[in-house]
Image (cartoon, rainbow, N blue to C red; front, side, top):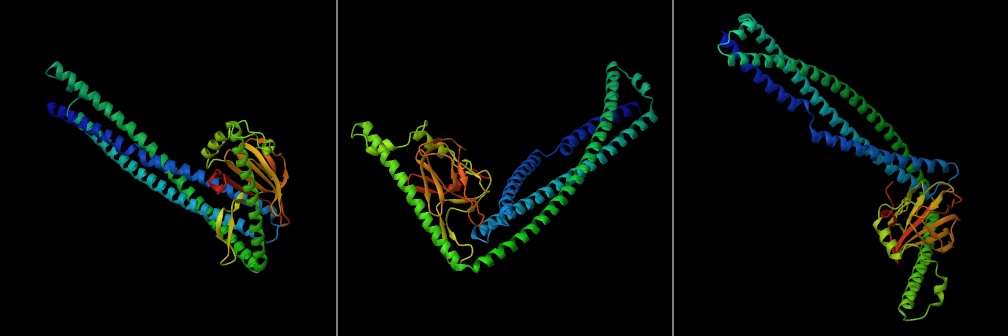
Length: 429
């Protein structure tokens, strides 16, 4: 019987030890990849939500300020259209967040199931330990079991096995306590996630109501503007003339700059004397033209906006008119709606090469950045002078507010004589 008891203790400990190790590896530890993916997705969603919320606040700021003073206009419709898109993007982001929360809930529920199963197995294992200990104590006294060893080696091994058995029971108790704590934490986490899911659902419902109201506002504007077809066509024609005049102005400036640059090169190479008009050329910036060009080009997508608050109400390119069927509009820059008297800033270091006034476009400033140019139109005031060197974010003037209560900056970017889409250069908001 003594040998049988020793054999039982010897076999029992390794099985429980292996079981505990497998439980630790398979059930207790989280899945690194899935957890990391959820964490990364959560961070991206929060960042995107914050960005869209900021845009919506800008829409509200600009539109709310002009609600009472502004007549129904295409600019208002464009602003509402932009706000509508932003609201839809926000709802799409909330839907992604809901899917993520469901994934988190599913993962937490799986962890709770695993922990519950593990705790049950640990309790069964511990009960088996108690039962085995009880049976051993019935069959033989442990002191007698130790001291009836035939050899000193057997004495040592029996003593060692009994210690391991005792340690295993302690570890089993500690493991049960640990799993119980984790189970409680996971259940609390699940409750929090479920509450978060309800909050997101409520937020989505509120956003859908906002979207519905915005669509009604959009339709009212469309209906109102559709009754002004002739006035809208005249407005399109006037805008086209203003755009053509702006293009002539900047092309003349760029061509003159190119001619003077060529004259300087010829003078430096000794091919000809100084061109008479070269004396009137604005001072060269401290940074070389080639360095400015390279710097401007390398900052594509990271150039700051010319106004602190605002949104693109009329994009670059050719696109269908929002209310007149079969009619298209063309824009060689972007129109940015902003607040009354908003400061207008240089988007990059350069030199002011032209200050002028274009009928219908107000004050206009052209700034040279090496081979690149930026143009700012519809200015109420101008705070710089021709030939002045400016830095990024230097205030060059304030935006003009028209009789409809609209404060809208027209902004263009050029590379040499080639007009470019300004939105690809501006940083994302």
